[in-house]
Image 1 (tube, rainbow, N blue to C red):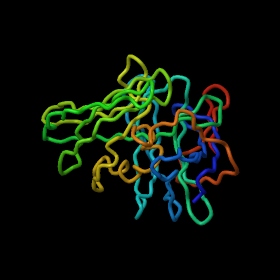
Image 2 (image 1 turned 120 degrees about the vertical axis):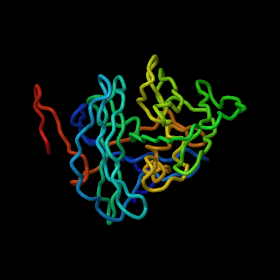
Image 3 (image 1 turned 135 degrees about the horizontal axis):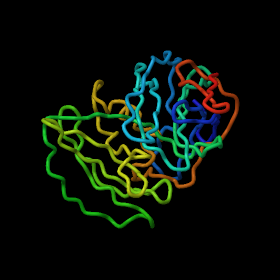
Image 4 (image 1 turned 60 degrees about the horizontal axis):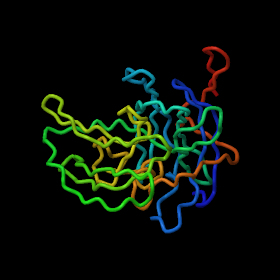
Length: 283
């Protein structure tokens, strides 16, 4: 595994349909912060990606994020692709697995400025589709502490369905990874006989469509088959925990940097660059 403190590469351009690939590795954790792994690793190469057809676009401008293999500590499992709202001034970059010595390291997906090879905001996008016939319990009362910093937003607590019971996620202060974003709390909505979970995170003003998901419930233990299993498996990693508040909230200035040669694997989403009007080149 690459030593902590090293920066790493990001190469490629992205488009809404076919996205260039980057190769970032997280910078050092802040002093005094909880020790968390910088990037997922695996002992063997991931399987070849299965064919994946995007579902119908849910709304105008929605960006498709490709599915990928992930190592859950015991075996390879596949996380399907999902849609996300576009983030103004950014392009989405798919992640991929890169060989590092005798193992493999995950290179995070995320938002990057158009034309730049720097991923500023590492995220992973999950279509959880969590639902249950049981109505969530009443929201618990919470006492807000003083905000830790100017600009912090209170993210209220909420209930999450683990597959065998309700678990409470405590409220916390969160800080926007970019100025101008607003926080949208997770919620449960009634659809026919079921209650469906709608995730929260950061959105552009005037919109409820999430551009930077926040998975504060990722620490809740769930079993394989639950839609949140991927999040729980990777809850220690930056693309899942980075914007959930607490001791390891956003740093506000940490970036992903370009470094070294890249060794891509067929399990990485395809790399494409546009050349001229409508033409795509795969490599």
